Image (tube, rainbow, N blue to C red; front, side, top):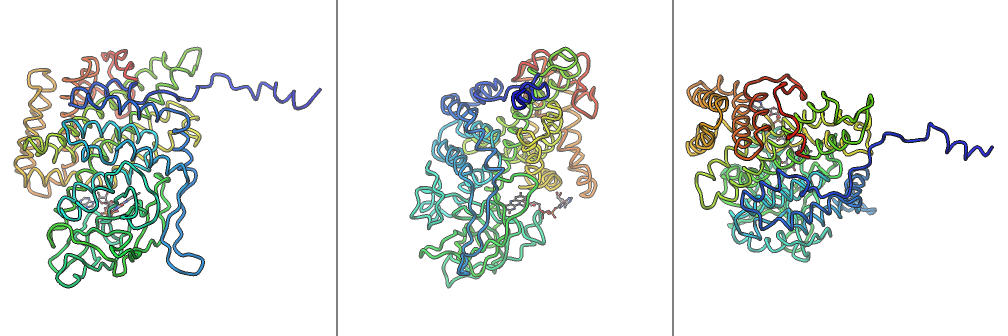
Length: 553
Ligand SMILES: Cc1cc2nc3c(=O)[nH]c(=O)nc-3n(C[C@H](O)[C@H](O)[C@H](O)COP(=O)(O)OP(=O)(O)OC[C@H]3O[C@@H](n4cnc5c(N)ncnc54)[C@H](O)[C@@H]3O)c2cc1C
């Protein structure tokens, strides 16, 4: 007998009961919640362009880029072969494909180039789709998008740089930006001795004559996407901590003294390069007032927080989509997993979390759209960005972990997207204000910005009378809010997570009541507000109507 033929026929090599790869689908059109939210929040005009990206991201080729960019990590070249500084990071072509696609679809620019109602919502949908395919590259995409907001504080610089930054052409060449067809922006705040506490920054800025130009000396302990063309950084100037625009090349066309020391060995987010950098008399331009660095860069931070919300929502949606797909094809004990009662409870619970996240994300994006014309929406967005960032980033970590388990052992191997989603999830929670810091920021907003408190209460009361349990919960949250005001600092800080969590749940429940099926709204209220739920997913009460929820994928 031919041994090769025998091996092929061996039962051991047969792959029975395997799930087909989830490919060739439209990430947008298959997400009814997102489609509906985009329409109801004023971005129906963008449906076609969002759908085009959704279709592209569902192809096998585009999915492959995500795997290739993570399996072939960026490589740093500090010096050339003669010992001159080179400070370049080289990426796999798949990274460039991902970047080119997102830039071409204006994920970095849409609200700035299409100044129309719904542009932030449309862009949030685009970002949510691309982050489902590959999250690492959304870091420079997000920083470029949010950097534009802070650059407005320096109109002349904005006028000069915006044509490159808002271009839909991705130009990866390491050249002076004025010679390029497109440019990207990054951010440098975190230093060795402190990240959250940016006022502890030690990097110094020395003014050149009477100009708005400075020489910067110091370091940044985390500087992601160092191949961006320019960075907003913080440094100590004579009048205090200030914000600076620091390009990779000086205006006279020389390499700036921006030295990449090494790349971080990260647990996830591996396609993206995150570096440690040093500045040795690097040229930079002041942005905004000297000494007011935090309030200048906060505009950038505010927009990147929106992106952490979008990024976490994306991880949850992709994770549960993969889990449901698996359950619809995999049989155990004579039945499809989808028909096993306990798996139905787990999947419905995961979907509920994802649905509530999507609604909160779109509501938040809408407040960014309305912030120019409506002060109440501006105030709401200020505090809701922090509430949403805290809660959705935390929920993504557990929701993705549970979704991974739905795939059994196949969810734990690297040929599958789940390990990447799982490793990415904690990152959104760490950067742009780690969990505690975000909760303290909520307290600060409540204390210093009465308009935020008012806008929040207005939003919480929008559903008054729709559901008795929601009314009661909302009332309790309002009491908790008032207590936070009255309490001493120490007590209020110690309870800040509890407050943030309850605020997020009340907002999500209200959105589900307004926009979702009554089955989903009731299941959420009973499990999350009335606490008829365990500590893990899959503990929805017996009264929950799972069938409509399971149709959300
Ligand atoms: C992959 C990756 C990429 C990054 N890229 C960038 C980048 O491009 N640019 C950049 O500037 N930074 C970047 N960061 C850094 C990130 O923003 C910081 O790590 C983050 O802000 C936290 O700062 P820290 O690490 O110094 O932690 P710390 O500030 O030391 O905080 C440690 C912990 O203590 C908590 N904490 C802090 N203060 C308090 C308090 N008063 N009360 C209670 N708890 C508190 C925090 O919530 C946190 O959990 C990146 C980080 C990662 C992981």
